[in-house]
Image 1 (cartoon, chains in turn blue, cyan):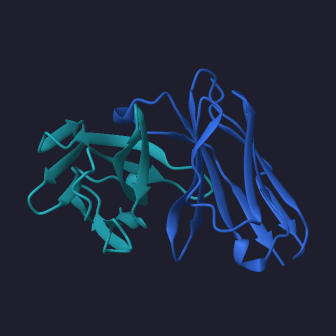
Image 2 (cartoon, rainbow over the protein chains, first blue to last red):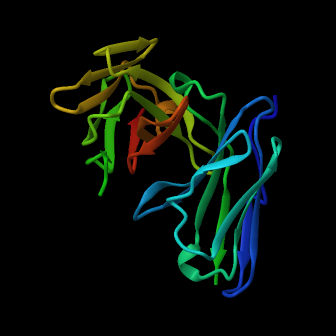
Length: 114
Length: 115
């Protein structure tokens, strides 16, 4: 099993540009999560999908952020327009829904907005 | 409002000694607690978990203790090894409807084990 796959690993973009982060969850996992990690706020949950349906998007910071999960094997997180304060590491995670084993995280996408 | 707090940003211990990482929480509805380990440039990896109905869970060198009355949990690593040097995140689980749950993470503690 290749684990949770995120792309790109690094993204540098100019303020105002659109950024799209991609995630392929582990096959068979029915829940997918997008987290953002910053020094100030640690790991924050942005949005959570279950069976491809958004369950909780209360962590999405503002309308510039949107996430989709068109099928069980793919999700995107889009920021448009991007701002310097969006610079962070964005993690995708997936799970089978059994809390005792937690989530499996991808390696993350380091986003820098200049 | 931080529901899961790790008040020590860093901890340094000698190889072979015990490492104790602490975590406090405020939400009494949390039903599961987990510890994750994170190396640089990698995602967090699951380490050990404990149900809120238990007070101890052990897995090899790692033991998690839960004190519900104090809303406090700790991770003990004995003996500590240089390869344990990483950021450790405490996380707590809450149900969000049906069988769904979500994890709330602390900010992490950087553990350094010196040879």
